[in-house]
Length: 359
Ligand code: NAD
Ligand code: DAU
View 1: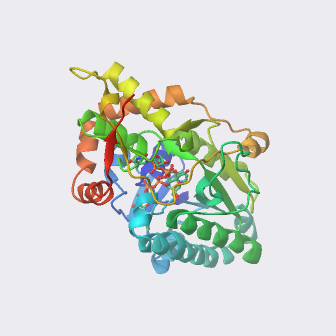
View 2: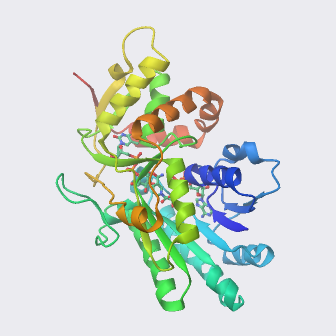
View 3: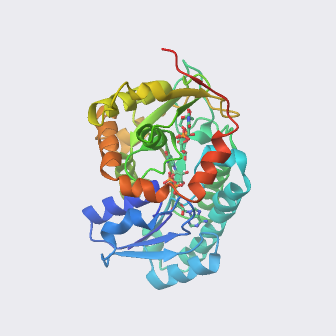
């Protein structure tokens, strides 16, 4: 079996669902259930004996050690993190606690477990660390995309904390020989995406008749990848990646934020039209994110050449599926848009001055 961390979050829950749809190998899912963790994402596998959910913190080394001892997984896939850049600006401490100290605690438990394994089990074991393209910093409009050798230059507390965790993973391979794999992926989108992030926020705000907030001029560029393509890439790296190596994962799909928002409005105008006007009428320019990275772009050539992975979805197919998923799952949206979510919306958006789009 494998042990994953953060499997009740956006990417982790998609990974669990995809894994169990394609394999009989059980998954132990260790998750703290922070505001971003949602056990309802896993409702369809609630009765599935192959999914063992464990409520706990990756930084609780004794708890992780006991789990490793009890279940003896062949691999650990580490998703758990604080993941939202804006939250890291308002409250960086939680990012250091989970992404840096938590990853350190997890690595210590895994190192102790792995060191005591028999030689063949030791060789076969893998620790796969799920990271982000944001560790590479920001690109100019004409710069080449990030490769695995691009120097680290994180710009937000979130990306700095992820960079620190990447360095710890690298050090555990070089110093102790732990068979690690690191993946650095671009922006994901798809089902179960918490509506604090751009794409689900725009879909849910649009349908609720609320403003669609565009930070700054909306010309920041992200490389978007449908979440099941990220999950497939992680499975490829887990099975065939070389220990100690880093693999960049991306969709070859750069888009400016404003263009993404226009696409979402146009799909909604088509699938769920308003009684009058377009969803584009709700677009509102608001004060920019401090330190906002201008452009991310991933060169995913290494994973394509060495591991034969490429995305299955185009942006056009993936984004339409995503909008349809949100239309079909309004109860899921209602459930997550309460309590902490409402406090966060107030904290992040009430101080930003806004102006309507005049195009
Ligand atoms: P998410 O915020 O949706 O989910 C994070 C999950 O981790 C939640 O279930 C949460 O409860 C859990 N968690 C948080 N702290 C924990 C702790 N101390 N112990 C145990 N569990 C804890 O995040 P996501 O968007 O699914 O991202 C997953 C991983 O992928 C992160 O490491 C993130 O940095 C990375 N990543 C995300 C993206 C993206 O676009 N979302 C892109 C590239 C990489
Ligand atoms: O690149 C990978 C990263 O992508 C992951 O490591 C992060 O975990 C993930 O959250 C994501 O980070 P971003 O900051 O790029 O994603 P977010 O959805 O928060 O924002 C996408 C872009 O949209 C970014 O340029 C900021 C902008 N934005 C975001 C929000 C929430 C807006 O213009 N308005 C908004 O209200």
